[in-house]
Image (cartoon, rainbow, N blue to C red; front, top):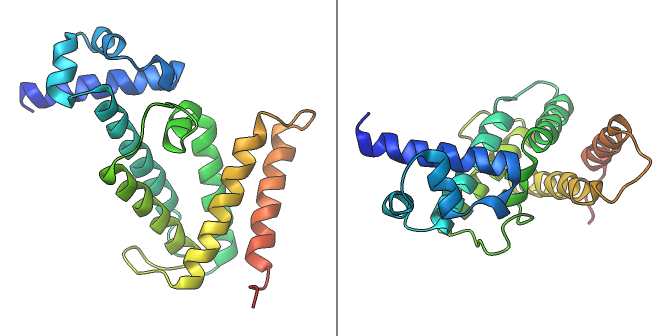
Length: 192
């Protein structure tokens, strides 16, 4: 690996560590540079701006989420595959709360995802739709698969978004509510 790729990777790793530890508000060019052991000009030279660093973190987050969800793969038991993908989604959130907040607009108020970031998010969602449809990797999900995947994604995200406001409920009871909602979405008849 050449030195410029190594520098870029160090800067990205430093930003990822800051995000994981302290959240998007701690992502300043100065803080990233200090953590990476480079000058602030180094961050600007390799990324152009703090927003471009956030863009890279956003893309990497959706790539990781999509990869993990797609590892469920097609299954003869579609409902089990969907439940497994929902559990993976919840686990991703639990292990990456600050990253999740950046990815879903709950973090850096001054960061707006660009076209590349939006494509990465759509690709990640398409991987969930493929799991919902019980499709092999690369297959194109049908309209019903997309709609059910969107309902599951929105419902699960909604539970995550209000989680901090829920008091008196254990982690296991909260997860059971999320999975019950997924089950209801799977078994519900579509509205005509």
